[in-house]
Image (cartoon, rainbow over all chains, first blue to last red; front, side, top):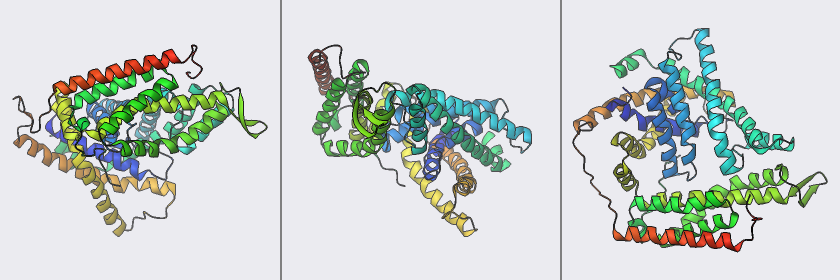
Length: 189
Length: 267
């Protein structure tokens, strides 16, 4: 499935969803640039989610963002972990409160993964800044409070990631819920 | 939103180089910037990329676009680091008696800026002067499997399609009463579901059709595939690599030798 011709053909389309999703997020406090990777991980599989994550950033690098390449590792980790969770049956097409809880726990895990992978890059390349004004304001606040650069950047990044990943992963799960069963069946055939 | 390639078609020596050569040039230029971590070495390496950009006839775009991205990002970085970097001690400029720019923080921000340009400059040059198709061909020659190279390459065609489909979905949902303009943040986040769900279902259908079209063209056939536009390494490529390597070693060792140690400009 993951590397069937169908799975391969899904990759560029999910890259497109990543791109338009981050474009739709303009004016909100979140990035939402991993929605396609999460969906690819959930619907197709973890390795597919990983590839979508990497290639999205390679695509951004070739088109409009010369600095996007290193962050491929963050996007890839999100696709991979979302896919692994789905593989173990933690992301189900049901609206029980148990599933809502599981979705919440997975999004917190994803926020931790994103923070751990992106903080070293933020600190090395941008001195701890992230490029979103409200996150940088929090970062500056921690620094003014006497924190060192790395922990201040990590804390600010985690605050932004927990917001971003909870919202984005819930959106991914709600979309997954709404895809007609027929489509999922056609796909898994 | 429109997806535009960095690539600019120009008749130049740099454009004619094999993409693999440009990849090697990029790494050669980035390594001293990472290794020495000195502002002078980084600036020298970035100047080298500008020289190559001039040879590739893309210098104005190269400098202009980097400035356009870097300046808005680095204004807050200079503010944050200058005012609040914990290493800051020496006052430079007072805003308030307790709020002032410190030399160490400003130097740190400058080191970051120079290093960033030196690390990413070569990569941006690569995308500016290389047709994406040639880049994919050369990546496959290095060993990237077709199953990875194909989706990346077809993304250049598909992402704009997805984008225009989003517009169609927006129109359709608006005609059914979905509000998309003048809405609050929560409202805006809620529109993701009616907008992306049809997009995803369309994507599944599209991938299904594409997989049939791909198979009809022998996508998973095990026969060794050839390229329509081949790329190859010539003597000029090796000459370029040798020249850049020599320039990088010469310039960076000069910079390291010139500046008295311990280097006050590095952090």
